[in-house]
Image 1 (tube, rainbow, N blue to C red):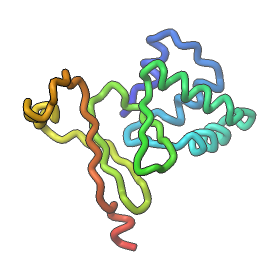
Image 2 (image 1 turned 180 degrees about the vertical axis):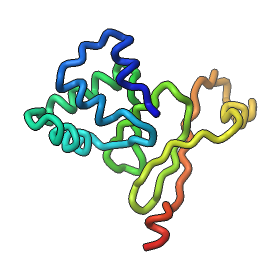
Image 3 (image 1 turned 90 degrees about the horizontal axis):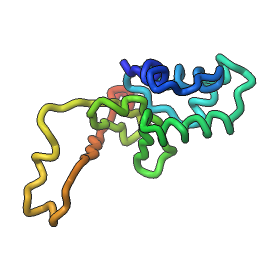
Image 4 (image 1 turned 90 degrees about the vertical axis):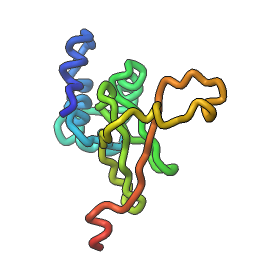
Length: 138
């Protein structure tokens, strides 16, 4: 489970009602919502929250490194609260569902020295693609 709210409190980030509800909507494992989905869910809890407030809050959280923007195949950006736990993504090529996965091993070790072209590689993003069970059954 994501510990987004706890991390924000520890940072001393001012949790207004609007910021709190955005963080609550994002909190959890396998959460990869678009900004519009965040706004819709936040508005269910706090009807007066504006779309601009949601977008601004998401931007602040990304800048703080507390959430990650995930973009797959030109689809809308999605926001992942698991910014502090190493993981990759498994994406359904039909419906766009995204799941966090944590395969064993270190993907940095998979890139041979001859393929690094002198880069000091510090991070790896891996996206696995396939068809989810729901789409496969349809």
